[in-house]
Length: 535
Ligand code: G4P
Image (cartoon, rainbow, N blue to C red; front, side, top):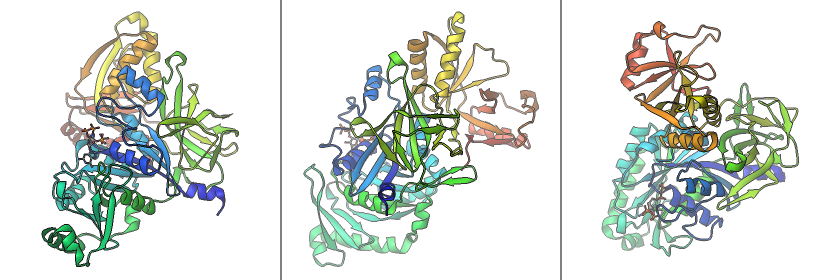
């Protein structure tokens, strides 16, 4: 195998998803610790409210009191080169969070063992599931009182619609958390101590070893024997193909805080995942081992430095090797170029890089030429990666500039921020140029918008909340068909026809009920939950 091939083969790029507080940061931190990327726990995030910034632009955001970054971290472990995509929590939740998942090849879903599936888990899971990427479940906080493990697995299956296969099984919980039973090797990993250092100390013992009962106690032993029987009898077979297609989620139990079960999980995860996944570009499938470089932009982070209005475009390398010395071709711009200041995040630092391989995430300085979903490839190659879906916002507002003389700055600012993908903007047939309907996935984006319009465009906003919560794209088979008019449709009072700035028509709804009402009464009307995507 050439060095080039082995570099790509050892890459793993995954996202960690969870509801806030389930332990995503703690788990990420433990991974980084095992990989030697950080020296001690607490470097990624300190105590509540004192989040240590992992990058200098996050520092800027921290000062502003807003955080809109999904960060990317790279580290090495056991010969693997791992890229972790972090998805921000509840308050920071934005469309960015969803788009970040487009750059991942698999997902680790962290579940709080006392709480089970929560709201944010559901949302993020849905996006991973629609791409059929492998989803691994880590049921965390076993060192606390938890819910019944069988019940937790059942809830995952029922609520998320994915089959589960417990790779290991917990022995007790809380203070009585003794270890896990590794189903494949039929061994018990008995946790003996945790020095809070790198890893937990553990001993392994065969499940049939008579000494096991002494080790974990007779009651726990007989419970374990019963549960193993139940598990082996009831659960579906382990099928790697189904794991690879996101139909079966391998489940692991552990405790990120005390390190119990974390390293075995990481090792098993790396063993079960594959080299970077291919991506579709129309009829073509671009494979990671294709000799020539290609990448797509999935995120644009504006305003790293206010004075320069600079932006960083984050791209996922899909194939080949990125060489900072070589020119690349920007398909949408129709131009050859050298990418400016290519950089990567290594745990706590940002680093200028010379090269990167398929699977890696790189950030490049963007003078305002890139848009979300853009394709970059080697000069001479010509293809466009399938578009990144536009996710439906859930909060809407009508906005305009208080000062009518500033209409131009207002529109310029709003359009610019929409182009970066932080907000979506719409108009109605009756809206004049001075008014815009803004949709966001997380309400924090409204604050970001208001802040940026004030500080960068000198515009103060008039805002009016709108009652809509759902957005659906109107699917037109015939691209040349006349746009629909409100009078063509039967709509209840709480639904509204709008248009985005690309001319797509959409419907806003205040309730699920209203969506159903409209689909039932308007025969032939086809609505889509995501915009612009093919899966
Ligand atoms: P998040 O990124 O998913 O939001 O969760 P995070 O890792 O920040 O963890 C949330 C809280 O849960 C933290 O406590 C963390 O220490 C705790 N935690 C994480 N994993 C475990 C675990 O395996 N067992 C137990 N018992 N607790 C765990 P906190 O008090 O809210 O914050 P901090 O003061 O410890 O930073």
